[in-house]
Structures are given as C-alpha cells and as structure tokens.
Length: 607
Image (cartoon, rainbow, N blue to C red; front, side, top):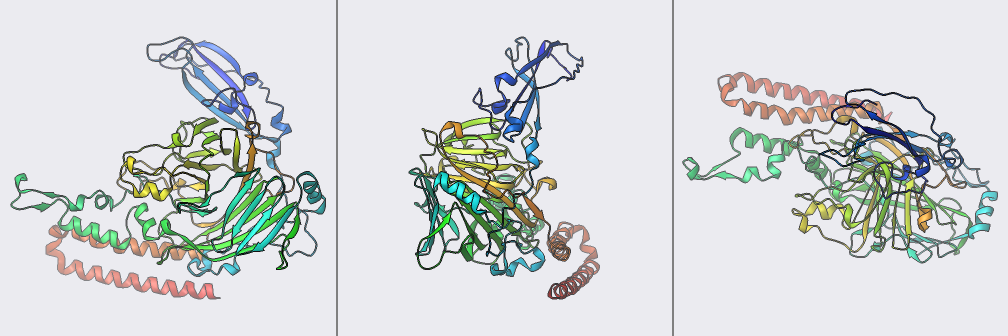
C-alpha cells in the first residue's frame, strides 16, 4: 500500500466477512463484511510518498467453509488525524477481494431421474433458426436437468413442510401447500400471477394495470446516453428551433436546415440512430406474449382434479415476446421449481436474435410486489446506484433503504436506482416478512436489481421529475445482464462494446425465498432438492452472424452515403456528373451481393 499527498499518519485496516455474516453496521465499506471479530488494524504512520508492504495471515470466519459462503476481505486507508479537508478516520482509499468458498465449485445438481418421466433436456433455438419465425412448440429448456427428485428427497420435504397439491382448472395452474403456500400460473398470460405464504402476498397481479405477473423482460427506460446518436438533435427539439429576424436573418430561419436537416431525416428513416430510438423501432417497450404454453412437467396434472405432487412441483412456461406490429421476436422459456417449504427456483432461457440492429438493454425479469414491502436490503454494490460500467467506486456491503429512497430524481427522468453485483436482495414489511431474491446458479452468479414505486414506462413517459407517478405497489426488476450507462459523451452511441449485451441464447436462474424475520436475510446455501444450474450463453450460428453483419453493413452504408454526399454537396457540385453514377453503381452492386448472400444462407439453413 503506497501513501501519497497529505495522508501522513494514516491507518491501514483489513476486515473480513461473508455473504451470510450479520452486519455490525448499516452499510458502507465492508457492510456485511465489517464484522468486528474479523477486523484488524495493520499499521499506522505511513509518511507521504512512502511505501509499505507486509504479508500476514487472516483468519476467515468458520462459516466461510461450513456454509459455502463467499468471504469479502476489505483493506482501507484512513486518516489517523483530522485534516482541514476531512475528519479523523476518513477513508481515503480502499480495496476489496472476494475469497470464494470451497463449496462454490459444486457439480451441477442433476437430480435423480423419476421413473416413467421423459427427460426435459433440450435447447432454445439458436439465431440461425430464424428467430423471426421460431415456433415455440420446438423450444425446450437448455440444461435444466431432468428435474426429477428422488422419492427420498420428496419424502423428506413432505415430512417437514407437508406435500404440495396441484390443480389445473379455469385457465390457471394452482399449487398449494402448508403454511398458506399458494402459487398460480396463468395459461393466457404465461406468467406467475400469485405467490403467497404465511398470509403474506408476495406478488401483485392486475391492480392498476401496471402489474402483469412475473415474466422475462428486455427493455429499460432510456438514459440520456441511450438517446445519444444522430437523432439526438431531433429528440431535444433542435430541428424545430428557428432564428428570428432580430438575429440578422432576412426571415425566420430554421436552426437545422439544408444538408444537415436532410442527413438527420435520412439517418432516422434508415436506422442509423441512437440505441433508444432503435429499441422503439423494434417495439421493445411493447413486447407482449404470444404462442403461450404452460404445463406441469414434474407429473402432468390430469383433468380429474387436484393431484398430489409430493414435495416438489415443476411448471414450464414458454412464449414468444413480440410487439403488435413487426419488430423484435424473442423466444422465452421459464421453468418454475416450487418446493413445499415455499422456496422457488426459476430457470429462465431466452434467444436474442442476431438480426436485431442494436444490443438489447437488459436480460432479466420483472415482478410487482405489494407496497407494504417497503424496505429493501441488499448485499452488493452501494449505497448509490451503479451500472456494469459504473461501479468501481461503490464498495460491496450490506445496505438497506426504503423503496422510495432508491429513486434518483434526474432532471429528465430516466432509468435509475439500479445496483450491480448483488448477491441477494430482499423486500420486506416492518416486521421483516417478505421476499428474498438471489441467483439460483450453482456458483452464485450476480444480479442487477432496482425497486421503485413506478414502472419503466412511467419514467419513460415523464419529462420532469414531478410527472413520475408514485404507485401503490413496488416494481422489482432482477437482471442477469444489464446495459451499461455509457457517458463518454451524450450525443453518440458511446457505450463501451465490452459491456454491451451480445445476441445469443442465454440461460440463468433466480431463487425466490419467502422470509419471516431479519435472521433470514442472508444468501441461503444450495437447496438439496432444487437444481443448481450455472448461467449459460451460446452465440448465434456463424451463418446467422455473417448474415446479420452483412445486413447491418448495408443499412449503415445506405444511411451514411447520401449524408456524406449532402454534407459536401457544395464542394462536390462540379463533380456531380461523376459522383452520382458512381454512387448508384455501388448501390446496385451492394444490393446484388446482399441478395446473393441471402439466398446462399437461406439454402444453407434449409439444408
């Protein structure tokens, strides 16, 4: 650790904790990792400009190995004396390291196969299958495991929590169990619409129309950076602005005119725009389910009435999300595994087509919880909002807040209040009863979440903070992948490519756990009778990627060529007789090559 500037007399501390350790504080550096018995002052009095180095042993908590929880070691440099610019103990530098538990390298829990039940292994169609016309009857989950649970496991669960009963009637599949456990899936909507235990409703459906049940989601409210692109001036109204005659013009003159006005119109028409504008053209804000299929896959419920399913029930939901008029089509499959204790694992799979002209803003799910669950607690980055590319200044810790306080009132309302690298998040009432959500993967993949009293559409429609409504219930989004914030500038597509979400087939899991007290607010160990499948990503087939690249290249060329010509029209006027035929010839050649490539790839896919 090197000390510099006026940090003389600083102290260097290290602390260790884990995902499950009870915190000594309410957040900040260390957070859940700031347990008192694991904290140690290493040295003091490092003078400015000097370097200090020491190797030492650190005793990790016993539950690091016993319970399979990750340990977080935090080293911080703080002031040993008050300065004119900061008080005693002010942290001037810090660093954290994650120490994975030996249990993090668990094998996939492929549970025993139940006799007489066909395997559910399959795959989500790749992009080479032409996702625009994919048939969901051909969609099966990837690496979901056989889902079977041996009778011994089921008997153990049933003896502890009672069995589950399933009824398929009235367009709904209903699973009920002890302690008031109830889960309902809608066949028409393809979503989980009811989830409750111990008299506490954990999921809201219907209401004011904003609660649509638990389903996968792929759109977010735009940030200002999402709206950066050739169409930025259109969005801010610059094309409607005009100079009055008092400015020295002979008549009222538009600010954007001539070649620039033509270029903006052309690029907006042919798709060379901001990511936000592309999302709108693809219909991402208005994706609706179609070709919905909902079925019990553990033991199919017959038409004769309620069926006893033992301690575990599996419901598979498949659908295609698409807007009413053209645009994106995303094939989705979700496998819900409910155990009689009330815990649920959801394995989500989706296919992001390579044909989309822009990266998807998020891969996640959205659910609405009752407004009474107004306290949010999480173990992840904080306390302020973070994004995948804007998080290095937010330490890992255990943080808590009210749902209302997570809102960030930007002057122009936009996506806000998200938190990256979260191990778990809970929403509870004043008594600590509510819902805990964490990754369901075997190695504890991280999630990005936000919790607000409004929906993404509410924020997107508002133009001033006071126009954002405050709804009665809370919208919780939990994402496997989330679009970066960007911000290198705000007038172009300046998001770093390494953070953009690639097309392909994705698979990820999440766990929903009813909690009834503060002691339960911790990442739970793997469940013995639930599948723990790692997150997956499979790229599109080579042919689909080549076709998508060729198509996007042609579109970019069509959008850019006339604009370049218009921009230099005055200088190139004397060469118009040569430029125009050359441009037309190049356009014809490009069209012919594109058609030839398209026919060739179509033949390959057909074969």
